[in-house]
Image (cartoon, rainbow, N blue to C red; front, side, top):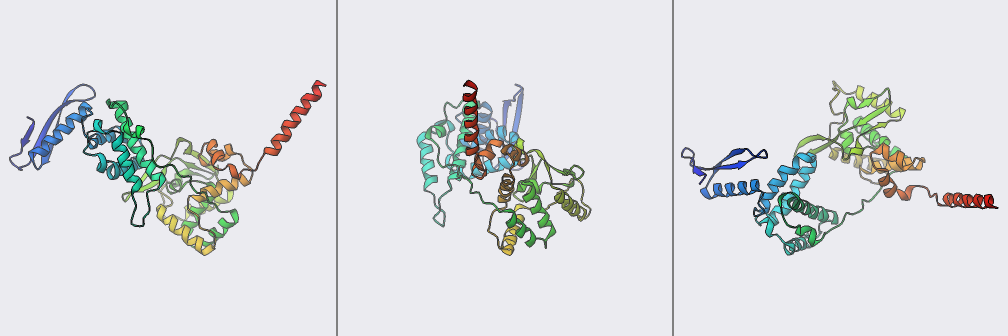
Amino acid sequence: MSVYKDEKTGKWYALAWYHDWKGEGRQKCKRGFETKKDAQEWERSFLLQNAADMDMTFADFCELYERDRRPRVKESTWLTKANIIQNKLIPAFGDRIISEIDTKDIIAWQNELLAYRDEKKQPYSNTYLKTVHNQMVSILNHAVRHYGLKSNPASQAGCIGSKEREEMNFWTKEEYLKFAEAIMDKPMSYYAFEMLYWCGIREGELLALTPADFNFTKRTVRINKTYQRFHGQDLITSPKTKKSVRTVEMPEFLCEEMQEYLSSLYKIQKNDRIFPFTKSFLLHEMNRGTAAAGVKRIRVHDLRHSHISLLIDMGFSAVAIADRVGHESIDITYRYAHMFPSRQMDMAARLNKERMEEQNNVS
């Protein structure tokens, strides 16, 4: 037996031997258990995890999943996963032996999620249902691929929910200019929204900007990080996708505005955030300016849509726009297809011309 009582503290501790990834024998000690049973349960779980035994509980496997996956994803991504795991998956399956979870268990759990209503009688959104289910699938897929679980019952049970298409609103240039004039009384807010509208950058990208990101000689701003706030902590991470890392050229007037803004910041260092506030502040200022300007209400993110619609209206191609805003061109084509002017008549006329020229050459 490798569970002992500490006579000085009156508490129990466990010693467990295992082999690390190099095959070398190691010892793990865990102290502070109130009872012998608690220490034995920890030892049992620890040994099952290190043996990758599928007779471990789902909660124990989630610890393995975190150990394997957390170093490979952005911290903000992991925190989202962890919230779902702790609040939706472990309460339902935490004590279950992972190899004994079957499709009927998954279906019963899905039905509980589908039947849920909050205090306002509102169900979970389709997007949230899909996100929760996908996380369950991801955990069990990890067990199948790397730890010998025979099959994934969450995949077999089928998906619930669906990704809802994001409603797309935007301001015309005239509407934005009315808004911008209404928030000029707060320079920091004004310059933040100028960057959002005229460069089409994301909120997180804006809030991560530092003086070092600007090259006023070349009139560019470098986008290579994003800001988020989780549990009261500021996090600077890599951007949303690899495509998001880019250099955006600024119009000349915006360069002059940003130079003026940076020069007004007292003792700003090259790696300090130039907009030291959060997304909630941007939303508050958006609402304030919208009310003052008398323009329709849109989200802060819709300024990105507004920038893209402006570029489409100016005649730029999907490829050029995608490069500027950090999207794939296929995404721009798909999401904003209804905004691009139709070229069908031009295509038909060109095809007709090609055919007629071919006939003339033959005759």
